[in-house]
Image (spheres, rainbow, N blue to C red):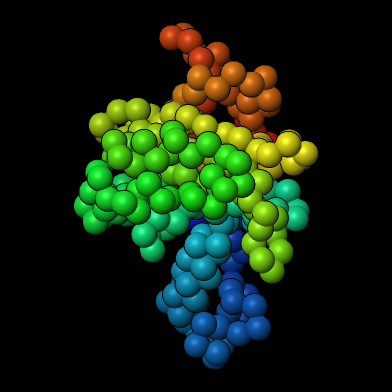
Length: 249
C-alpha cells in the first residue's frame, strides 16, 4: 500500500510504499513499540505511525532517493544517501541556548527573547569568526528578523572541530515563501562536497519551513549541479517542489 503524507511546511506531498502486514509481526523491527506482538489492524497502524514518526525526525525525507509518481514524491526508504560527506557534520548555529531552525515559530520566539540590540546576537557564531570566517551577514539577518537558517560545518570528531564552513539564508518575503541563499563558504582545503552539502541542507531547512523557491546572487557554477537555474530577474533560482537533495535536482 501507499502511505501519503505531508512533512512540516514542505510544499511537497510525499509517499512511501509499505508492505501489507503478514501475521502479527510489528512494523518495528524486533517487536512492537510496546514490546508485544500486534493483534489488530489498529495496533499495527499505531506501531507503524510511531516508526514513521521516528524515521521522519531522523531525516527520512532528506536522505531517501526520490521519484515523482502521479504528483507525489515517492521516497525509496531502502536507498538512504549521505546528505553530507563522511568525516564532516553540519547543523544549526546555536543562539542563546536556542538552536536556530527554519521554523518560523522557533525564530519568532528567538527574536522576542533576544531583541534587535541584544548582546548575544553579536556573539553568535563567535567560534566561526575565530576560525577566520566572516559572520557579518548572518548576524545582521538576525537583527533584521529575516534569518531563515544559519548552518556551520565541522570535522566529525570527539571535539566537534575545527569548524570548516558556514551557510546562511534569509526570508525574501513576509509570507516566507521565498528564501535567499545569502552566504556559503568553506575554508581552504576543505572538499567541495562539504560546500555542496551546506547548500543542500539550507534548501532542506527552508523547504521544511514552507519555502517554495530559493534564490541567490551567489555566483558559482557549481550551484547549477545542485538544481539552481538562471532567474528572469538575475541571479539563480531553485524550486523546492520535487527537488531531490540526493541528486541535487
